[in-house]
Image 1 (cartoon, rainbow, N blue to C red):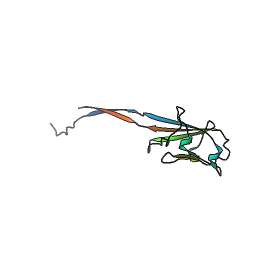
Image 2: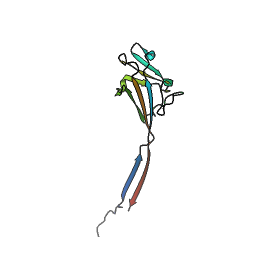
Image 3: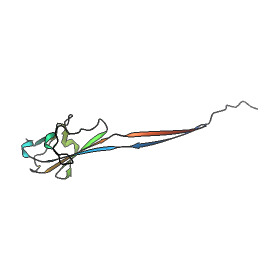
Image 4: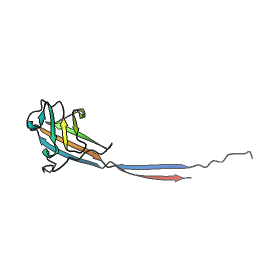
Length: 126
């Protein structure tokens, strides 16, 4: 018999299940012209109401690093993210180019964070 290289044959199958676990906070505010300066609106966090209708007592929830995002609606219309910023501490929301926002327009901020969890199972057959 000639020399032959014997190789170990293995088969591995991995299954991964991931749950995204979204955590959404919504904040509501009726625009007060006192918060507009030179076409920019600066809304303190305490001017918002939460989803239960209660006033926000301190800061807004902020997005998780690399795992969340904001949505801002003015008068029911989704705004481009380049037009607003949320303070890193959640103490305020600043909206630029807002000179035409009518008084009492509803402003809604949605904060979407994810707390994903994954489990993997590997089956090896040899």
